[in-house]
Image 1 (cartoon, rainbow, N blue to C red):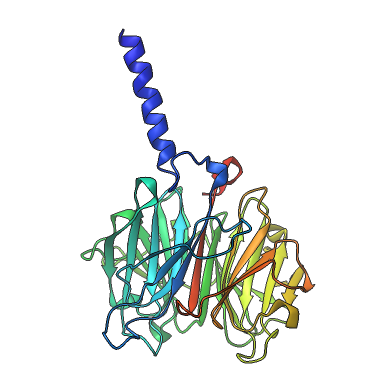
Image 2 (image 1 turned 90 degrees about the vertical axis):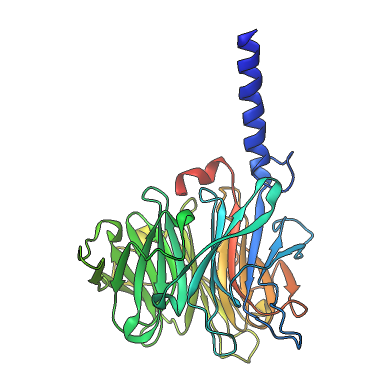
Length: 359
């Protein structure tokens, strides 16, 4: 009798854990391809009511390409956004652009069983006025926050990001000086951060998890170990790295008005390039047919079978391209967000057994 009770409990717990993976309790993990989109608008209506700043596409890889649910986080206008399945939460910063209210905080929205989203904790700090990138390292349970705020620019490390609270400060505070940064990706003990301005490229911060800080105030000065200059790059914004397929992608803003001047730079076999001082894209998606004008962020389907790359364009469009695309190609799918606002951040939850080693 005890054996059967024990077996029943194990099966029940397993079923509960599976149902926690998404809105559909019967969905297998290989069915998950959920795109979270961060919108920057905040109280743009006459009533002063906060705009919905997270919208979700539950089946981003399907033939029905549309936003089908929404959530209002505590951010005063959405900015960069991050999802990691081991956190079981979404982390979002405010856009903090000239058109929105100042908000120097980062926020956690937890994902509940059956896919509900619930606003959780926040971390407020004067160090977080212009958050421009997030990356997460599972082994150390560390969140890297890239802040580009003039002389107060830095990379701040938050341990146990699911335990964020208003009273906490970042665990490590690395001040980088006046580095013009945007975007972040983490791989093999290296943090990669986009370099804007002259000679655009990628700053490489090596072994940042083990870097020491002053015991008294948890601060230190930090310079990039090296910089990867990107051949022909112009105006870099969001980046994403797929460790399963070893592909890095970066959004490159166009001239702001001319359709097709935006580009998506794709670096195949990125780990093989990253040891040098200069890298060139393996492929570039661009041209009038692409409709890319102001690409701001990118996300890659990280599954071994993943076929798509997603782009948030400030012209109020979300594009889906084939991950194999190159040159002047039309998007596989387009969603117009004019009714919802300006998409400025993407976080993709795409999971199966092949993705587990990367988190």
